Structure formats: structure tokens, C-alpha cells
Length: 341
Ligand code: AHR
Image (cartoon, rainbow, N blue to C red; front, side):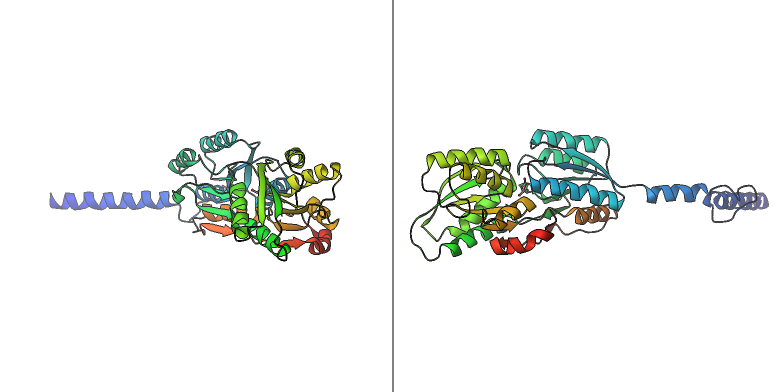
């Protein structure tokens, strides 16, 4: 009885070892399968070689900056071998929310987006989090207090941009106590760059009571709206000294309105802008824009690195700020031939 039990245990152990050896596919190749692909290895290769699927929702195509940003993202995804699912929100938050939900449904590996406006994202970001899909913010941020809803945010410091614009103005008018009438063309209402560029600019000029913003309105970051609003500004105000535009495109539209009114942009009305697109540099070289604060859209490469990093489980910095400069007329003239966007 005892002996029979021992034999039974031994048989069981031997058959278990055999099953394990066959199942483990431990590198031994039999004659029959010598020329067949190793199933386990093939599956592993497919798993590691599988293209990362990255869903990206872009704000729109409202400005030269945005076009350069889109090109940078699309080219960099191609170079990195990332399968980019690109969606254009046409400056509408509801379109962006729809796009994010569609990415979640498609089970993409990573979601990225540049939020049209700052608020109203918590619900959809929670949906992405619940689905286990990491989210990367680019260019613009959200005002959510729960920072666990996104893994990293890559983009400019818009408050600093506004501050640089204001500091230039303070320096430019340091020798006068006369009132300086400033008109402001704001970016899209509720967007991070519009809010922050206004805040930074106002903070920089606040101790100089002669520097006065006499009127401020949105031009939605577009050339057409910049022109239209500037026409209205010129009609309502006789003595405009300075235009502060939150981007080049609005300033370029405003320049058309200023010239049509028989005034000289850059001379009769000093102009400060943000972005630094080629057309802005061209206008600055002609003396029509006096000061440009750079905002760099060419971060596609950095974004793809972040996408790969997230998939590989790397810890990413919560915030990466893009490096940017400023340009006077002389500096713009010098830099124009090599301007990349
Ligand atoms: O968010 C960046 C801003 O959006 C750019 O300054 C502007 O041109 C764009 O539309």
C-alpha cells in the first residue's frame, strides 16, 4: 500500500516535469519545429514592436503658431514611429471632449491635448484615468486641482511671456510721466495664454500709473478678428500709443487696420506681440512690430519622447517649460533668415 503510493507520487512528478518542459519552450528545438517560427518569441516580438498609438487633440488652426505646432507634432510622430491619431477641435471645447472620448473608446495607449480653454476638463480626464490611459498636456494647461488627472505638462510659461512684454514697455517709457494709452488684443477668452499673458503684463506695469490699458478685447488669436477689433479700437479712441497683442496673428491683422487708418504701425502706435512666427519677424524687420516675446511651438520631438517614456513606465517631470527668448527690431532683422517657423 505504502509502495503503491510512492510509485503514484513519482509518476505524477515525472509527468508534471514533462508538461512543464514542453510548455516552457525553453529553447530546445525539435526536428519537426526547427524551421517553424517560435510561437512564444513571435508573440513577444509583436508585443514589443507594436506601434504606440497616440491620440492627440489639437486646438485648431487659428494661427501661424498653431500650424507650426501641428507640423512639428505630426513630423515628430512619423520620425518616432508612433501611430498618431490627430484630431482638430476647431477652437471648440465640445469637439475636444468628443475627441478625447473617442480616443478612450479606441483604447489608444496615450492621449495628448492642448486644451482650448482652461476649465471644464475634470469629468473627461477622470474617464481617461479610469480607463487607465495616461494623458499628456501640451502648450496649454487645465485649471483642475487634481493633478493626478494628467502625467505631465509640456509648454510655455505664459505669465512670464506677459511679464516680458510689460517689462519692455516699462523700459521703453521710463523717461516719461505722460499717460501712455495701451490697447490690448487678448487671445481666446478663457484660454490659459489669454489669462496668463494678461496677468503677467499687468503685474509688470502695475507700479507705473501712467501706463494705462484703456481698452481690452478678445481677437480670438486670429488675424481677421485682430483686424476687426483694432478697427473698432481706432474708431473709439483717438490717442492710442501702444498695442499689446497676445499673438502675432492678431497684431498682423491690427497692422492692416492701423495702416488703413493712415497711421504708421511701430511708429505712431508701438506694437508688442507674442509668438515669433516668420510673418511677425518680417513685420518687425520692417519696423512695424517693436518687440516680440517668443513662444516656441516646435516641441513635437520632446512630446514624442514623453509619449514613449509614459509607455515605458518612466517617471516624467510634472512640468517642463519651453525655453524662449525676446526680440527687438534689430534682433528680429538678424534672426529672420534663420527663423524656423
Ligand atoms: O497656446 C499658444 C497660443 O495659441 C499662441 O500664442 C497662439 O498664437 C495660439 O493660437
